[in-house]
Amino acid sequence: MQAEPVALLHRLLQSHPILVFDAQALPGYPCINPDDTWALACEALTEDAEYLPRLLDLNDLSQDAATKVLEVLDSNHADLEHPPLLLGGIQAGADLGRWALTQVTKAPDGSQHWLRWHDVRVWVHLLWIARPEQLAALVRPAHSVGWHWRGQWHQTAIPSPSGSTARSGWTPEQWQAIQAIGVINRVLAEVGAPALADLPQIARQIVAADVEAHTMTMWDMPSRVAFALHQLQWGQGFWQAAPFRPIMTAVATREATYAEAVSAQDEAFWPAVSEALTATV
Image (cartoon, rainbow, N blue to C red):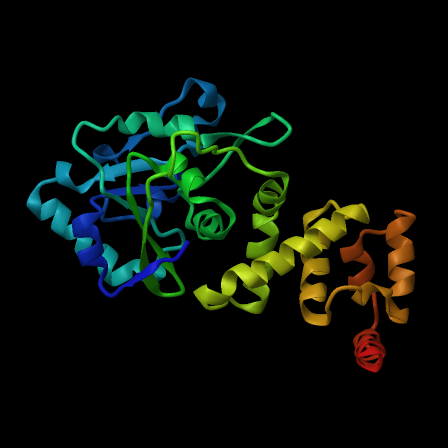
């Protein structure tokens, strides 16, 4: 799905008055009084209640309080570690409390999981992973979402699902991508966040690398990230180059994880890798 750039945050907030954010991020919003927010509640998520998102409806605030929130967010949004998502297009009388029910997501194998769509680090990937009806199932009754990426605010309209039989279940391929979001974000933290238009292509390359890492029993996060980084840099099949053979043997025999084996190499290792992989091009 495409996102429309938005020039000024306060204009976006005027049409998206409900802020949704990670409860753990509340101390990072000094302009927001916690008493003005409320947490989503869901019996199925009682044990995870502290991780449920909190919401703030600017319409419930006084004019002065709402203006203060807008001004502070507008001037300091670049410094926020976890910017809020902004929700708009919500009709009066909508049951906002039921949003918690959408947090319980069923995987293709039938197991239930917690899907943090309100975290922009997850949301930005759901935009290329999910189908329109799946996004709609997550954020309705909101029909528009504002979000922050690389210093720019964006607005994404959520279209109505076409047809009454639209399915919202995740395919195995989609679920693989969702499970790799943590790897994707860690890799992007190393190489730099790409332009929004380039994100899906790069993210899919990282997912493909993570799937391959799993086939070679790389389960720990440092190894998954390192393997994806190297595949992004050197291309698919890089690990077959001669310098990597001892490393892959150690991984296969479980003498060391991929991350441990790579980090144990001396300074001559990477020039040898570059020479070997350049020779095969």
